[in-house]
Image (cartoon, rainbow over all chains, first blue to last red; front, side, top):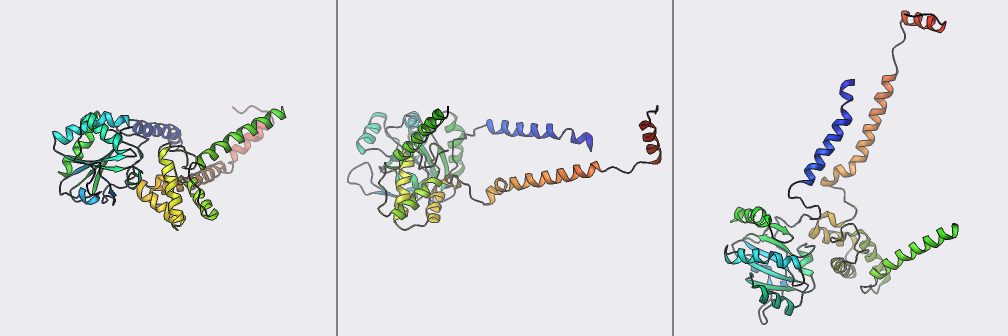
Amino acid sequence: MNSFMRFVPLLIVSSIFIVFLLMMGGERNPKEIKSVLIGKPVPAFSLPTLQEGEAPLTEAALKTGKPILVNFFASWCAPCRAEHDNLMYLAHEKGISIIGIAYKDTPEKSAAFLAELGTPFTNVAQDQEGRAGIDWGITGVPETFLVSGDGIIRYRHWGPIVGDGLEKRLLPKLEEIQ
Amino acid sequence: MRVVIIAFSLLVASAFSGASFAVAVDDKPLVDPAQEAAARALMKEIRCLVCQNQSIEDSNADLAKDLRHLVRERVSAGDTAAEVRAFLVARYGDWVLLEPPFNQMTLFLWGSPFLILLLVVVGVYSAGKKSTSEPLSRTEKARIKKLLKGGDVT
């Protein structure tokens, strides 16, 4: 008993060490807040589109029977520029429909942003007040949601889709539900 | 020295009150003072999701501003504090509350102080038990007697 007790402090310290090491490694981002919307239906919304004269975009547009991406972006957001090429790739090479939601931006600036970089979006809605953003639980832009054909949110990509994010995180999730 | 301390603490106090004042006035307060007080109390409980360790009342972030606006809106629409909290938790999860609620996920968090207390009590109790040794045998008593007399015990 006594000889075992001598090793208890060492055991405690080394187990704490291992826990910290595991927390540091891997894909984990401590700033990322887990979305509570995974597995839930998309929140209801009705937002004006970027194109004038069109009917407002609602959550019904997300229930297409095929997986769809919802991308919150803004012209004032630098990481959105960084992920733009990957969105173009998803839309034009992979044939995924992407709905863009222009978060807290003017329609003129959003249109100029898309005119400059090209548009990966099948439709763009405007969330000038940021209210839809709150309903989707976003904490900033860009954030991208993967919605299955029945309108259930399956995955939320926090931050720009760059580097390993596309191949290792988004695409596997997409294949999973396809 | 005392004057310096008082001057410094006044400076610190004024800096803090100035900062919180600056954030609080960027939105229109509610007309009803009771509702405004309720909204302000709620803002102190809601975490800013951008700066993460500030409440939305203390934060200058855009999202915090939007959430302050939202809290005021819900309160003036007649929502109770619990309803406003539930509204935000449904969107951002329990993490949006600065004080984690007691549920299955936080059982260990809230229970750990009691667990540690229990461990300490058990530890102290068992250590106290160990020190009570058996009574001395006859030969040991004889040895002590010899020692006290200053004799050689080897």
